[in-house]
Image 1 (tube, rainbow, N blue to C red):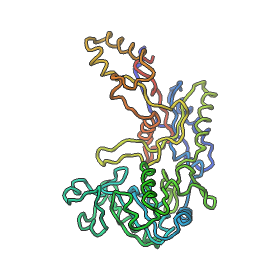
Image 2 (cartoon, rainbow, N blue to C red; image 1 turned 90 degrees about the horizontal axis):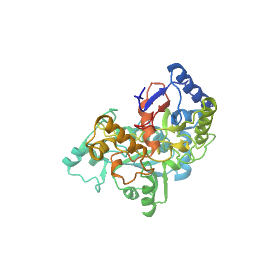
Image 3 (tube, rainbow, N blue to C red; image 1 turned 90 degrees about the vertical axis):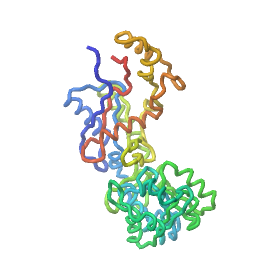
Image 4 (tube, rainbow, N blue to C red; image 1 turned 60 degrees about the vertical axis):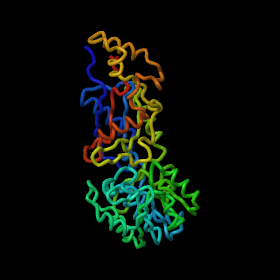
Amino acid sequence: MERRVGTVSRGIRCPIIREGDNLVDIAVESVLGAAESEGFELRDRDVIALTESIVARSQGNYVSVDDIAEDVKNKLGGETVGVIFPILSRNRFAINLKGIARGCKKVVLMLSYPSDEVGNALLTWDQIDEAGVNPYSDVLSLEKYRELFGYNKHEFTGVDYIEYYSDIIKEEGAEVQVVFANQAKTILDYTDCIINCDIHTRKRTKRILLAGGAKVVCGLDDIMTESINGSGYNASYGLLGSNKSTENKVKLFPREECKALVLEIQEQILSRTGKHVEVMVYGDGAFKDPQGKIWELADPVVSPAFTDGLIGTPNELKLKYLADNDFASLSGEALKNAISESIKAKQSNLVGNMASQGTTPRQLTDLIGSLCDLTSGSGDKGTPIVLIQGYFDNYTTA
């Protein structure tokens, strides 16, 4: 019978993961148990993906507010610290800010506007236009901001992040000054010790600040890169990719040893089933919400670890292009056969080929990670492992 199903994404339930759990065994048993329960079989090039959260939890990769405060004080001197371009998030940044404030005497909080880096909005562009403000050059004090725009609560969370972040800083005993600007060098008018909290533009921001005469510049990726008093750490990403665990603790992004994890899972599946699967760890997907304008990716990368078969980008032909152009005169079985032959004969690298235009030119791990993030969700589905089948199949795969 002709195959009728292409890509399938399944959320796989597994036990609640705790520090020290054997995640290799849990992942393998959960996937194989799901296959037996649901009556499907693994195939070569299936993808098993584990959310970064359970990987970091099994590693015990947590840090406390006190740990963050100590590292901040050691690296930035404990006096006036500029905190620039943080994202607006109770989950992603609030506890980090608490630690930063605990580690210094004054925080100059510089927020980008009308939104943060990932699209969480303080204001709308219409409000900016109506006020006659140029966000590319104008620097606003808190007083001027309130005069022009008043109080604006986030569309989804109902939080006024300016007030919320200011209160966190003051509750830690630090003085706070709020500034609104989109040029990194603006902070140098207030302090020369700076934590730049942007994620995907962090290297450029550091370069601009150091060239402008900053004394010390640390990104979030420079804080908690080593253990403090036995805490967790992340040598590559520091606090980037962290999530709130409790009111006084955050879970960091998984450490580098998660590369060994994906390789061990791949090896066990091969040993148990004879199938060569690909395995990855995924965090936030990379997609934009059309309503809230929020770009999901608050992690430094979509996937911190993956097997080699997931390196690269798709190499696909656009079926509708072939149908409307090369084979416009064909239909039915003749059209199907012609397109099938084109797929079988396609080059190994279709860059520049008009028949591939419109296919998504993104890394496989970013595409698959986004699919996994949407499948598992971030709430109570209880499926932190995702099995994707048929992703690498095409129209000709039997």
